[in-house]
Length: 157
Image 1: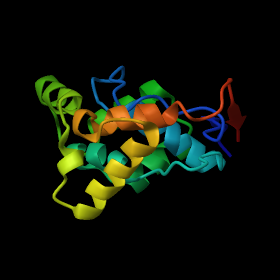
Image 2: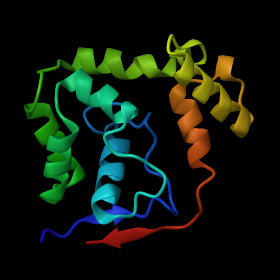
Image 3: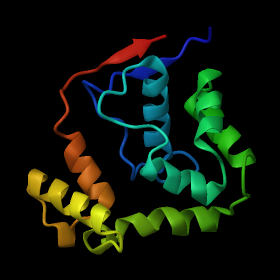
């Protein structure tokens, strides 16, 4: 079995969806943190291959199961980026930049066309003391992540 070091997401949060330190892709660092925790059984209340992860997967034209298999192979963050850039649809640096930066300005979840998603988002914002009309999905995720326990927590499998 490949040795995988994963965060214990019952004790620490994954990296922010805003983190663009790998190839400029928003969501990427968070996705790999959650994927490793999923494999290790330390994902807690988080989900891997969830709607947020699928924003990234759909943009790039890859499947969550393929990303999971790459993570199971023990790829590092950098190796995952190389894998991701080769798989799926080719994207220019400019396309990645425009797609990733859009999340800083996307306040649409408060008025989502899906009434269920809108209600969920407004409820989460209320629970966290946020104004849903002035909060992006990623801002809400970051605020929610701050409610998780403190301290370094990793699990090796």
